[in-house]
Every structure is written in structure tokens, then in C-alpha cells.
Image 1: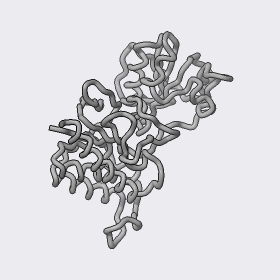
Image 2: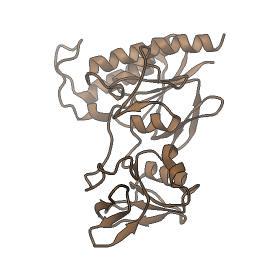
Image 3: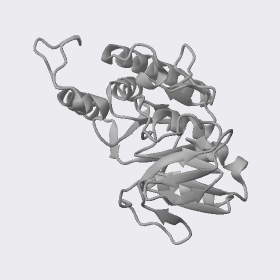
Image 4: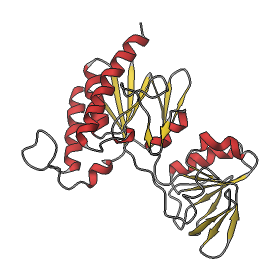
Length: 287
């Protein structure tokens, strides 16, 4: 049976699911929280509600409607997407395969305000271990973060780099770290380097010499997930065509992560477009 996995349970993801499930496609949504809408106290500019509704309630209503139609929901953190004979969505707890995947996780990028971080992006500072680990073979690198996503990136780098250090920037690691990965919990003062990253300077005056720093704070964002499988991104958005398809066969994106008007109405439209496109794609692929 053809199936689709949608990453994100906001308006774009739910809208996609409403179309695919009604077309008889096994549909699974993987989400963790209410995202940016969870912080919206009142919404008055969305069609169909005579009174203001909170973002959290709007998401809950969407989820309940999708469940009624038979959409399967999984509460988990997505760490990456890869490809074998099918697309594979890797989460904290399990790997899931699908013939099509939709990224609908919004636009957040978690990057702390550290002096030198932005200036050295692309010159030693990276946001994707799978993409850039090759450039740091045999070198000393670090990962900035303290959760599952940071550990995932560190383990990826461990396969090719000389040493990997997890920098938590003053936080206590939220997960258990294997002995093969060094841990430094000292707050960071700045990054040093002229044309490329050379070292991390900590607030206590100590210094760590590294060639690469991989930012993995919080959970993987939309462009992080896209880059890991080779989808084309531009700044903080995923590039899609008129059908919401990326350059990777079977991989689609919808909502804020594709740029444009960052509104619920646009996310719902994107989801509808992605859903109808996926229906055609999957029907053609199984002929």
C-alpha cells in the first residue's frame, strides 16, 4: 500500500493529510508540539471562526479532524531523512519508511547569539553534519547543542573526524553521552578565526582549538532535514516547484518552510497542493 509520512502537525501538515488519507493513502504524521502556533493567544484573520481562537486550539481541532479520517499520529522528534530503496525518516525512537515524505515543520533555526558565529558560517561553522563532515576528515570538530539532535550530529561526525566535542554552552546535557564524545559545559564567549574558524573561546578564559563547529541546538529545523537528504535550500527555506515537490523524488515541503507569506491560510493552501500532488505521484509510481 502506498504511504506518506508528514513531518509536522501544524496547518500545512494536517492539510496535506486530509487529502492523502481521503485518497486511500496510508498517512502518518510525526510531530512533537504545537510549534509557533502554540504561542499565538488569539487568531482573528483565519476563515471559518466567528470568534477568535488560540493557535493551540486551532492545531488541536485540525489534529482531531485528521484522526477522525484515519490519519496515524506519532509523537516523536525527527532527527533526519535518508534514502535506501524508500525514503527513511529517522526519529529519536525508530526509523520509518515511506514512498513519499512531506516536510511541514515551519522555519525555526536555533542559533544562539555567540560572537563570530554568523561571520564564520560556511567558513568552519555548519548546520549539517551529513552535508559537511567530508570537509573535516581527520580534524578536531565540535557540536553545539545538548539534546538528541546534537548527539545525532556528533555520532555522524565521529565516523570521520579525529575528535568530536559536544559544547552545551552552560547547559547540562539532556541525554546520555557516550565516552567516545567529549563534553564541555562551559559557557561560550566567542568564536575565533580570520578567514576560517580556529577556536572557541569560553567565558572562563579557556580555549578549544577546532576546525569545524556544527550547530545543533534544540531540534532539527526544516532546512536541516532537507539538507541531510540533498534537497536544495536557499537561506532559511526549502525550494519547491509548483507542485510543492523538492528536487528529491518523493520529497515535498509545505507551509512556512517554503517561504512566502507566513500565514495559516498560505500553509493550508500549500498542504492542499502538496496532498493532491502526492496522490498523483504515488498513483503513477505504482503503475
